[in-house]
Length: 457
Ligand code: UD1
Ligand code: MG
Image 1 (tube, rainbow, N blue to C red):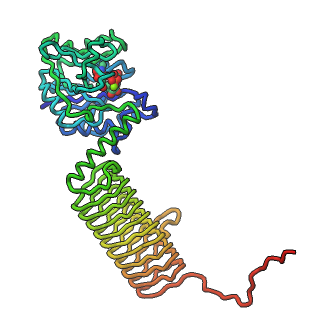
Image 2: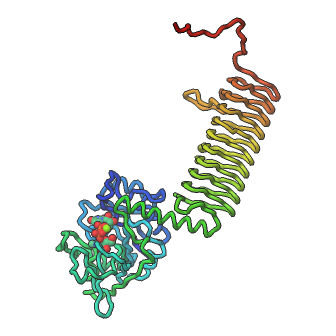
Image 3: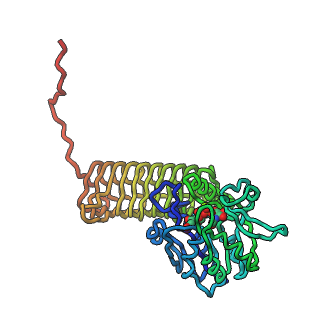
């Protein structure tokens, strides 16, 4: 079905009390507007027009989608005025125009599609919902035969009309040609001196164009964000729904109320996730992976049987099968751990490959390093990979043993089976199988006496 999509995103969002445009506030890692754009992505719209106003340049720079067009509405004189600005950008060859709100982020694709379908280029279709407390919303006014006659805004409604619980959600689909005509004929003679888009309903009725109400599937998909409180409420609803989907697929979440996914998470079987973990970007967890409490994992692949112990931070990394990481470990971009690698507490790994069975268990840094299989990398040891201008690699062969508190000054290569004595600063290559000790020789001072405090008297 050929379709125009129009998203109203000009509003300021005064109640957010923020310097940022309202529709750029984030829900599960994506802006409110991006949620709406992503929900529309599958509708096959001929055009998607975003109406911007407050923070227009910022909003336009942040929005992502195919064939987006932007129109500006300055000043903002109401929802009808907003659609007037979009009129020149609409594709006349698309008989249906779907109107959504940039601050109603959880509208479901299926609902948006049903609304467009209900219009079918011929009817005016309103997305509605019955609310226990309809205060503030436009009410759906019906005739005795049940047909929709109009929408009356709360401020303009009579006491009797305010009893109506069926409300307009702010989303509609209209025949494109008629919509253009109607919005250009709107007047602002109402309580707020605004051009109300909702006044087109009465125009449609007057012209004999059928008006139909399409019910929303639930409250969550029609809730708007006007305040930090509402934003947090929608975030929890969204996270709860994601958590339920994962649990239905067999993922064991210690507590679905303390789980945050800001991207995509693909899980094998028997995955366990403890409380307060945050997943960002694209993350995959293999069969039997266990994630301890308070881990943050972004853009990472964790293979089968691997364990992230609590308070581990992983970004842009690959963790091989059966590897153990943390607690309090940090894997930075380019960390690539092989099978059964162990990374312990307060160990940082960046742009380094560790082959199967390598271990760095305590207080260490590996940056720009290639580490062979079964290497043991001692506590407090670091690669000095940066000379202030350039970065260099450290190559550590198979079965190397690096003692504690060593500095490996890159570029440097330790041959297979080499041993580095504790406290060494290694700045030249070490041949395979050799012991290197690069520190001051120990000296015993004969006859030395510890100073004594003078006797009190
Ligand atoms: C609107 C509807 C009301 C409905 C309610 C649902 C009108 C006249 N009323 O009221 O019937 O129950 O939504 O939430 O449409 N916007 C612009 N430019 C403007 C004004 C608004 O882009 O000049 C945008 C806002 O940023 C927002 C959306 O349009 O995304 C709705 O505007 P808002 O002021 O919230 O309308 P309501 O008064 O809530
Ligand atoms: Mg509103």
